View 1 (spheres, rainbow, N blue to C red):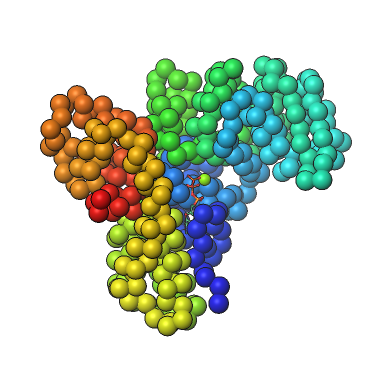
View 2: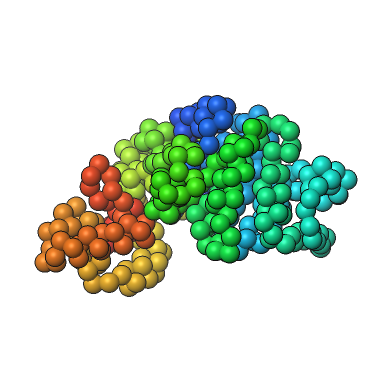
Length: 352
Ligand SMILES: Nc1ncnc2c1ncn2[C@@H]1O[C@H](COP(=O)(O)OP(=O)(O)OP(=O)(O)O)[C@@H](O)[C@H]1O
Ligand SMILES: [Mg+2]
């Protein structure tokens, strides 16, 4: 039988757990034309949430992944490609060309064996023209930018100002900006000096709901004929603090361990967590090695739930280390306390 737990890919349908409350709130905001900024640490399920949300919207939806974008040209290529693909491909677009691109200069379209490729010169005029594409569709449109923080890599033009200038005039287009670099995203959307200040409602995507996550895992074990008690899954949920990726990753590993004996106990959970820690170790080690001695000391305290100021360092040095660790998305502040972003990195660190 096939392992029913998926990780490292976008999950949809039966592989997507819950998020009902989040999706309903976002749908209601989008219906009112409110732009959304969706922030969470890595692998919390932003992309999966966006695509599952899309399936439930009556609007035209466009998904624009900005991962790896470093230049205005990259941005335009990706933006344009997302639209052309959605609108029916190059052939269709060619026939309605003038409606969408009345003023575009120097556009090249290459049709190759792996689909098409469009190149457009990143002049200000072209950028304004391309950014206005969603509005020209003439119906309500949702544009979701994934990995939106990457936009700050683009240095040759002030794309944020340009996008804001255009977007604020749009009547039919509502945006979702998703990203995982918390400090970059927060700076874009809450810094009073930045163009996107108060442009959107900020939505922090948290852990999976406990009951829903446990039922999800239980169902997948039971439907593949493996016996497991709810309390065993609850233990796993607590260890990984409801982190969606780790729930799937540990469950996947646990399923492999228990598949032949068709029964899962608490020892198996410990075994599965241990296996995941071993696999992830090189990544944790690389991150750990990249930190300065001060940052390491501070981080150890955070992982062990001790005040970071209870070490033999000046308050200024601790503050500097905390700031840097936050910028790296290694720690976050929750209810005035610092906590580790990655629950398994935290366990690894405690065992160091
Ligand atoms: N609602 C969910 N139900 C079940 N599994 C989920 C859910 N959300 C996320 N996951 C798990 O987490 C993994 C990562 O999800 P996804 O790629 O959507 O996250 P992301 O926040 O976009 O990550 P990244 O920051 O790396 O882009 C998925 O492969 C899946 O295992
Ligand atoms: Mg993603």
